Length: 186
Image 1: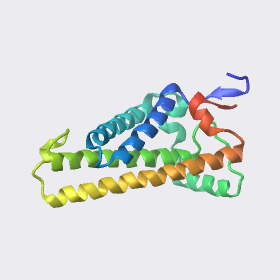
Image 2: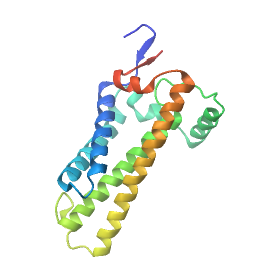
Image 3: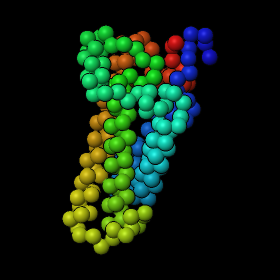
Image 4: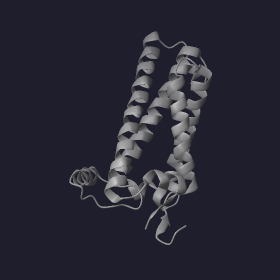
């Protein structure tokens, strides 16, 4: 590690991030065509999200929710300052990045739980197999909600990537590199 760098992202956060990128992408792209792969990568996404939530309470400083969950007013102020190209630099997640993490985790929870419930209703399998025999409309509704949140997640990913590009340019640092090596400029 260079003298002017500080370790920000711990190995768990980095492995979680790239594992989530992989598992969500596979789950999203396989959909109904490769049901076994879709379902199992969906379970992997849920497992990763649960682990990240736990890590948000017990992990090191920059991984903890208390380090990056800000009030809505602070998020709005940060976004306003970013548009004016005068946003303050944060070593950990900035207010918008923190809000994005929370929204993404909630969206992923909604996607996976509705997928598991749909699987229980339609196939009578999985942890919610007891839902088998539910009315047809319930399965159709869960499928629509599941697809809505999966598609919302794709939109959130696009916004996240745009945010990373903007933040990297604004503060002259490579945030993608930091998510690989864990280090940012001090």
